[in-house]
Length: 76
Image (cartoon, rainbow, N blue to C red; front, side, top):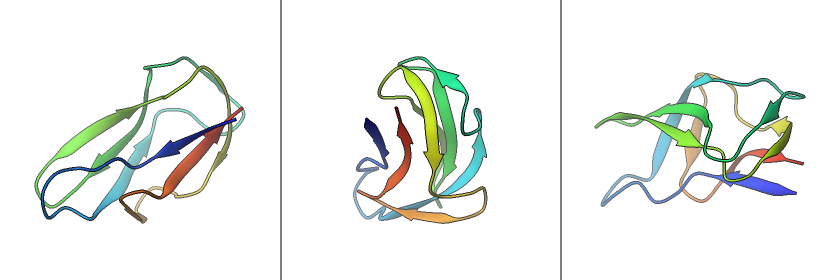
């Protein structure tokens, strides 16, 4: 099981907002596929999948804020 973790985003940035999930829970993803779009007060960016497998669970929905180091989702 792989967790999708919000990485360090740069100096002074401690959180991001989920803008859009490219996949839904239960769908298959491949490593390095764009998984989720996130926005900060400085930029928008896509976070790639860290592993291939089934997107088992999404912990944060669109519009919710995530802190650096928190798990966004699990891949089985």
